[in-house]
Amino acid sequence: MSEEKTPNLKHKYGRIDLDYAAKLATTPPEQDGPIFMVNLMKYHEVAQYSSSDAPQVSGREADDKYNPASILNKIGADIVFVADVTKNHIGDEDWDRIAIVRYATRKSFIDMQQRKDFAEKHEHKAAGMKRTTIVCCRPVDEALDTRTRPEDFGLRNIVMVVRQSADREQVLSSVPNAVGMWAEGTIIGDGRKYDTVQFVHVATEQEADALVASINGLSSGESYAMTLSASVDGITS
Image (cartoon, rainbow, N blue to C red; front, side, top):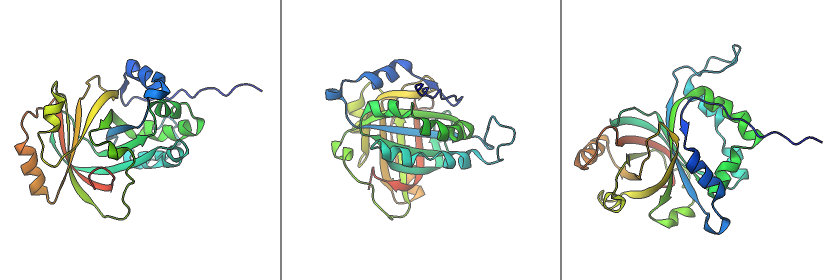
């Protein structure tokens, strides 16, 4: 019986940091543990399937077909945050959707890429996604490692800030009431690496605007600031 080949996932939505991928794959078990993959996503208006007879759907609809929740459950990972971007305040690019997956270990993230069932779903992501950045994070509050996501809480308004900064400690303490994460690596993107990600629950769009305006040191090219409408929020709730 021949061995099953490892899937070769093809895509054009970002560049992989091969050095960091190697670190994820080779972290010793005694040093490994939960990692939060923060996905920033921008969709094609029309999904770019390679097959000419593929259905004409939007990039967002293709990504919905990709939804790997069933596979994540098999490997002990959880989707802990899902939100649509309602306003892009600061950044060179705009984004459509944010999702955060908490993996039980770094290696499990790499192992998932080699699964046949994941490869079958991945074709939808490759077709729908125009670009993506995935920032791999650890939370300041390690209680997030085991927090279960709430059920049926309705939509929540969240301000999300992603930054490059040499002084992570100062950044993570500078935004009142923020849930902070420090970035271990940026596994996929455009080559830029980010250092911190922060989330703040706000009541209104006006409150979101005021909060972003009050944050010092945000600049396009080095930062993103967005208002989100979260349908799943296991981060700030």
